[in-house]
Image (tube, rainbow, N blue to C red):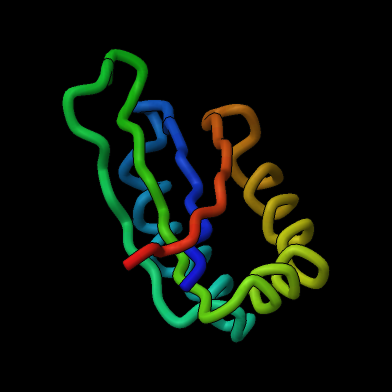
Length: 101
């Protein structure tokens, strides 16, 4: 199992609207690519929230090949849509992890 993790710090001024968009638009668009089986939204605790909250979005993929398919075919377009909608009102970075049991 591969986990594609995106950590995002969102400005407080857009937080509530962004969270609704995330749940109703962005995450469904990512899941509709067929590259991920499910996702989780986590809010980081014990962080400096003076400028806004920080979230971790986790997308679970059955294989590295499926994750690579997402990168090749879908990620750039979805990233551009995010920046067109929200501009510089958020900061994001991603990481990829493999589940070890």
